[in-house]
Length: 268
Ligand SMILES: NC(=O)c1ccc[n+]([C@@H]2O[C@H](COP(=O)([O-])OP(=O)(O)OC[C@H]3O[C@@H](n4cnc5c(N)ncnc54)[C@H](OP(=O)(O)O)[C@@H]3O)[C@@H](O)[C@H]2O)c1
Image (cartoon, helix red, strand yellow):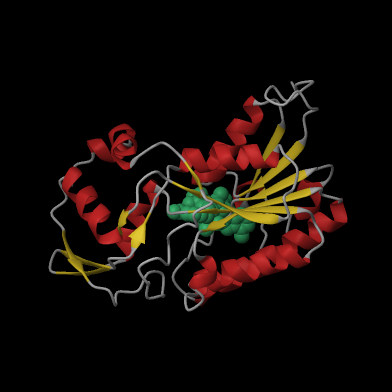
């Protein structure tokens, strides 16, 4: 049953569609919004909505006041990720304009503008440009890497003879649940028509935090530091992935996250 008020703000509940609402961050956002009393709809290909083709968008957006785009490319390393983000944003924003959506909320990555040699980040930047030009009121959240994402970074890094090649650039990762909280909060507020940044509490070199992660989970892999090793197709400067001074910082640190995570009990 729908609530009469948002339990946190006291305002009437809204229909909020979460594109990518079955994914890591999206499904946490759906749960948080539902707990506040909103009609939170998870939309993805699994529920018959595809932003790349536009299928199902008009139906799911009917009556929606807010849309959160937490979708992600399933092939993040090649040119197809550029096509995913640009086609997805084009279809989604057009459908939102037609449905009279009042707030488009999007999750992107800190440093997106500095990484345009990567097709993935070029795609994210193109989507952000489309959001700003769309006329739909918006808020873009730039988050740093999720702790959960360290595993994907490990999988994507160059591996030879039990050694991972990793850039020594700084990162300041964040728990995905903190990102979901921030997205839910933003969706329930006024559009800022701006980009805001969110990061975790600790800044460390990518190579160092991954080495610590591998040691903590007793993985047999070694880390080889290589400043020329690309990250999603882009070679990183020291501060490419680091948030600005005004970024909001969260409290869950790496050790706390790891202790609570499934990886603390992993056997390699
Ligand atoms: N991971 C990080 O460290 C990090 C850091 C900062 C920002 N972000 C951003 O956060 C966002 C979400 O990341 P995540 O890790 O939560 O993603 P994820 O777990 O990979 O989930 C991706 C979601 O997108 C949906 N999706 C994929 N293709 C779709 C399509 N064509 N149409 C509609 N939905 C589609 C998937 O569902 P179906 O398969 O059912 O379609 C799924 O629900 C991304 O935009 C990412 O850039 C991530």
